Structure formats: C-alpha cells, structure tokens
Amino acid sequence: MILVIGEQRSGKLNRATWEAIAGAQQLAGLGANQPIIVLVAGANVDAVASELAAAAVQEVVVIADAALEPYTPDGYTAALQQAVAQLSPSTIVLPHTYQTRDFAPKLAARLDRAIVTDVTAVKRVGNDVAFVRPMFQGKLTADVAPEGPGPHFVTFQIGAFRADQAARGTAAAPVRKLAIPVDAGAIRQKPEAPFQEARQAVDLSQAERIVSVGRGIKEQSNIPLAQALADALGAELAASRPICDAGWLPMERQVGSSGQTVAPKLYLALGISGAIQHLVGMKGSSTIVAINKDPDAPIFEVADYGIVGDLFEIVPALTAALKT
Amino acid sequence: MKIAVCIKQVPTRDWQPRLNEAKTWIREQDANFEMNEPDAYALEEALRLREKQGGEVVVCSAGPARVAQVLREALARGADRAIHVEDEGLGNADAFVIAGALAAAMKDEQFDLVLTGLQSDDQGFAQTGVILAERLNRSHATIIMDVQVNGSELRVKRELEGGWFQWVVMPLPAVLTIQSGINQLRYATLKGIMAAKKKEIRKAAVPGGATAAAKSRILALYPPEKAKKTHLISGSPAEAAKELVRRLRDDARVIG
Image 1 (cartoon, rainbow over the protein chains, first blue to last red):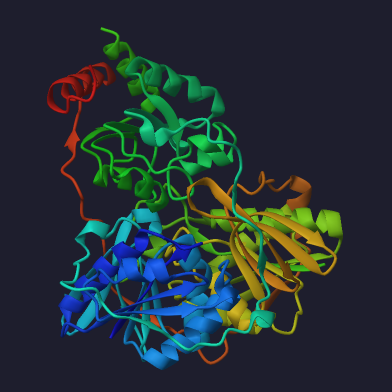
Image 2 (cartoon, rainbow over the protein chains, first blue to last red):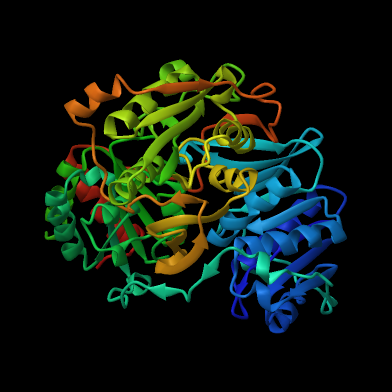
C-alpha cells in the first residue's frame, strides 16, 4: 500500500497534495497497482478529507486532533509514527513542501527508514523502482534507489506531477478516522501565527512580461541595465533569490519557491543558472528566454530561446534592438 | 552559549560536472570545492550569536580529508575550534550517514545550539539537519531567517512558502537549519587566517564504517534531459539581439 500524506493549514488543502496523489498513482502503476491511502492530519479536516475522497484511492484516513493545529514537527512526527504502525504502508509519498522538509526526515529517522527527497519522476530500472531527482543544483540528474526495509519515504518536487492529472474515482472514497492519541505536552515547538513581511506591492503573478536577474549580473550597480531592458519590453523586473538576499532588489521581487510563482507570457532570465528553487517558480511561463554565459546552465533546459554569451554585451544590444 | 555549526564542502558554482567511469558519482579530482553557501550563513549566524551571548563556536564537518580546507576557512572567519569526522567514504554519503557521523562526534559536547544550512548544493537532500536533530533528540526548526535567544528559550523566524513567515518558540538545546540570506557574510581577514593556524581541528572516526548506515544508492548520474527544445541564437551580440527580438515578435508573439 502507498500512503500519501497530504498537507492542509487551518482546514485549507495545499494543492501540492493532489500532485503527490498523481505521483503516487504513477508509482502504483509501475508495480502491481498497489492500493493508495491518503492521510490528512489537523484539527478540522473533515472538509479537506471529503475533498480528497474524490481521488481514485482506496480510502482517506484522518488524524483529527487539536494538538496537530497549527503544525509542529514534534506533533506530526508522533502522530504519523503511530499512523504508519497502524497502516503498514510499503511506500510513503509526500509533496516536497517546506512543511514536509520540516518533519519527513525526522519521521524517517525515527523509523530508521530511507527517504528520497525532491523527486521529479519515477521509473523502473531492472527489478528496482528508481526515483529521479536533481543533484548539484540541477547540473546533474540521479536515479536513486532507497535501501533497506520499507516503508520508504518519497517526496515529490512541486510541479513534477500535475494536480489535474490525479485520477478521480467513480465514487467518493470512504473516509475513516484513525484512533491516534497525541500528547500535546510533548510538543516542544510553539508556533505563532503566519504573517507576510510587508504588503506585497508588486504582484508578479499578474505580470505579462518579466525580466529576471540572477548572480550573473555581478553587482548592484548593473541592475539598471536590466531595468532598461524591462522598460523597453514593458516588463516587471524580478530576481532569483541571491539577488534579493544581497538586498539588490526587494524580497517582493523574488521568483522561486521562497518567493512568488509566476507564469507570464514572456520570462527573460538574465544570468540565472536555474537552480531548482528558481525553476519551480517560473517554469510555467509561456515563453522562456535565457541569456547566460554557461551553455550547460540548467536554465536552458526550460528555455524556448537561448543566447549563450556575455549578458553585459547582449542586454544593451537587446534594449537597443527593441527600440528600433 | 556553546554552538556547533555543521558545514559541508561542495563543488564550486562554476564547476562543470564530469562523471566517474561507473557514472554513479562525479570525478572529484576534476572539481574545486568550497563551503556550501547555506552553511556559510549558518556559520555567520553562530558568530553573531557568540558576539551577543558569549561562548564558543565549534565547526563540524563529516567528509574526506579534503574538507579540512573549509574547516580551516571557518576557523579563519572566527570559529573557535573544529571537529572533522574523516573518512574517504563520506564524500558521496547520504544524509543518514552524514547525520549519524556528526551525531556520534557531537554527543559528548553538549551543544546548546546546532546550526547548519537548510540543504547542500551537491546532493541537496535538505535532510541532514533534521535527521541530526532526531539523532540528538533535540527540538528543531527549518529554513530559519532570524534567531533570537531569550535565556533558555529560542524564538526563530521560519520561512514558509510564497513570502510567508512564522515565529516559533522552543526550548534550548535545539537544532536549526538556516536559510541563505539570513545575514550578511563576513570574510576571513589576514589576522583571522593567521589565528586559524593555531586553532584545534579534532579528528574523529566514523563509528562502524562510513557507509554501513546508508539508506539510498545512486544507480545512475547523468546530464538532465531537456524539458524543451531550446532555439539557441548565435552571432554577435547585436545580431543575436536582433534575431531574438524578431523571434519574440513573429514566432512567439509575446511582444508588440
């Protein structure tokens, strides 16, 4: 049995759960079509459970306990350890969200079982199931096999499977509550309410065109070069994380897993190598242009058009060409 | 306050990958190595905490002989001493092996706080710090953008997705994984480099063989398959720019 651990916050489902279900269905298809069970935990998860019951899965199981809301790694690890003991899955599938990253390695370590993170695809290699994942900042891809007894944990990269590809069942799957006690007193973390740093003045998700800069811009004093190109294109200026970390552009202009997710008609990446954390935030763009001095930069894997060369020569030429 | 910082040595950013003959790992002899960037931010945060709280910063790494270079660099930036869990089999080890090796070397030290980067730029598991917390039976939090110490309590700012954050309070001792950009890095001064030569690097062995605890195996390593067919545009900057504009206007129709 494949157990999918879903994610919700305050009764709202994280859509990445559907991606994980799609991935689990594909994984099940590689083998003997193992049944899939979806689990969701929290205080008020009835609505989320019935939403998930639409999936073509054997059942949806629920751990309902006030001690699991808000999320804490101690609470989740303790509850899920018991759920795994009750359900005995062979594989445990999760979306590779920040929350999963916070508790899944702890749960795997507690159970002393393998965990393969940030997986983009599943495939058969001989008799083994291999999990495909990026390594070395996306410069290489690895087929990885988990070792030792199950259950093996697998986390699927956001966007690796499409939520709308998750097969829906002909009838709603049954929903069952698991009897799992959670000791609230044993939870060491006391989370406060989530917040946003500042009102996001720039909504990049609505931009039709985006010019985005990465480490290749080298210095803050070179930013106006990119701004001039953005102005000529009628585009918003954005950046990869290191540029915002350095304070060269405000955090609200960051594209990627920790910033905004964008899907403009045109995304022009200047000196961005294309680490996976950046790609997940922009690979849904209709047309992607990459300008980079490194022909092997991972950004070219998602680019429709590419120029290999010095952005300090190409960008002014591009700005000039747009004005003619 | 006694703080440990776990650092990893990874290939440099401009390194062009080459594979070993079995195509299961990189040709390490072709690579130049540097400190994993998120770990550098963790080190900087530890140095800042020591400046405020007093105490000691101990930098720890589990890896082959080559990692002594980044330990030395961390000492030059200001760490007080180092622990090197040395084994040639650790170069491509998984997170269980690395966390197990670090936990064994750290268990008699009674650190108040353990910091490490949120993930490494080589294998990028984003697991080691969390597994280490479990092995040390410590509370933990991940992807941290601010650290406040109030007596025996820790208040940390956890990054959530999409520009959201959350403060989390927990007791010390604890393990934190640090996000890049939490602070501004300092670099080693000449004085620091000289001082580092006199600082201790304690060597530790991996208990029970380096790879005994491995829970994953790389079957194959290869260049990524392209998701799209990229039209590469060549020529001089002016020619390439003109051609790109033409394609964006006429083919992709994404500009006016």
